[in-house]
Image 1 (tube, one colour):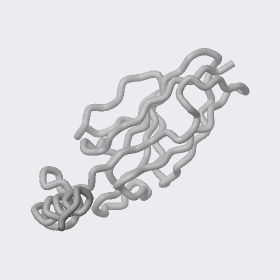
Image 2 (cartoon, helix red, strand yellow):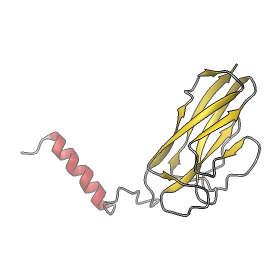
Image 3 (tube, one colour):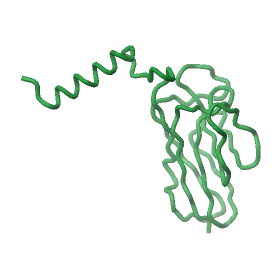
Image 4 (cartoon, helix red, strand yellow):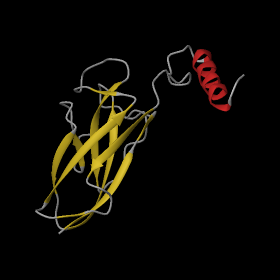
Length: 142
C-alpha cells in the first residue's frame, strides 16, 4: 500500500532521476542556491559606527576569488546601492565590498542613519551568479 508520504518521496526521486540524479537544475547545471545575511537582522539598530555582517549560503560552497570549481563562489556586499545584474562582472567601486578571500563575515564602517546591505555571490572572476538568490537587510546605525 502506498501512502501520501511514500508517494511524495517517489515523485521527488523520479524528478531527481529525470534531471540526471544529481539534484542539479537542468537549466543552469548548478545547484539551486541562496545567500543569507545571518546577522544583523533586518531593521536592527546598531551602534558604534560599524556593522558586522555574517553570511551563510545553501547549495554552493564558498571559495576564494580565482578558485574555478563547480558550484563555488565568494561573497560581495552592496551597501546603499543597486546590485550588478546577473551574469555581469561586479565592479570594484565605492559601496561594493568584495570578500575575495572566501570570508563569511565583514565589518562595515557606516555613518549614522539607515543603510541597506545586499549580499550577492560572484564566481571566480567576480561575475554575479545568476542562479543564486540574494539577501537584503536594512539596518539603522546610531
